[in-house]
Image 1 (tube, rainbow, N blue to C red):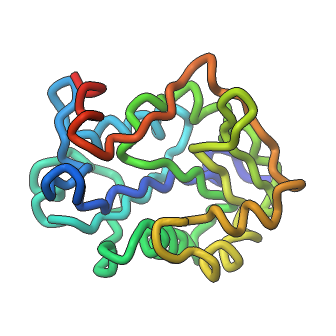
Image 2: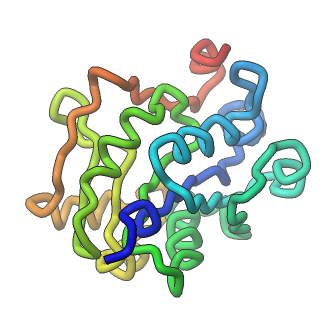
Length: 199
């Protein structure tokens, strides 16, 4: 069996246009002197994901130019304005045909979720059938680990901003919940008020 590290890829959804932030792409929001997308990639790598695919959308060329994403597979999502579901589909499609057996899916606008929480969920990988999710006081959240056997089903149901939500609801009993509330804060950077979380 191949090394576990080679089998779980990081999949970062970073295409959002920040509509409620005045059209500032979330990937380029500054946090501790670097764009959010860089922090998110480093967290996935620190969690053990040697392969990281990053889905870009809003001002993708500017993100490519300004962010240090060396070694990442950059995936363009021309349909990013239709919601996160399109980015999830594009990202999973980019992993098809690789050696990857599972995708650890994280969101660029959740800087309070770092490497420790990502590593915990990544450790939920067993095989292509695996489904695991972070939980916060028992409530399912991000990141989510999707075994390759589920990618087609997730892609078929990923519409609008729902992402994998509908699919995961249908497969609730198969999901290994991994409590992360002690090491991560699952806030989103969605509005101007949320920018207080950035340093």
